[in-house]
Length: 82
Image (cartoon, rainbow, N blue to C red; front, top):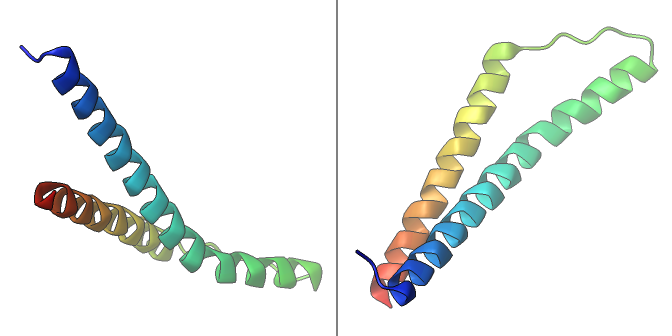
């Protein structure tokens, strides 16, 4: 059983890990998606049609999750050093 201090530390670390994961995943998602979405907006404005490449989007999601996992590894590494 954890004492209250250990429980509080564990909750803080878990919150930091979740936040780090979300920030890294979102950053990668935005970096990869914004150019495509901008291109779509231009195409639609010019009266064209947009094709959605589900394979590309699945790769973007994998990259985002991978970035989040890398951030968690970095967080754990840094936390273990302190």
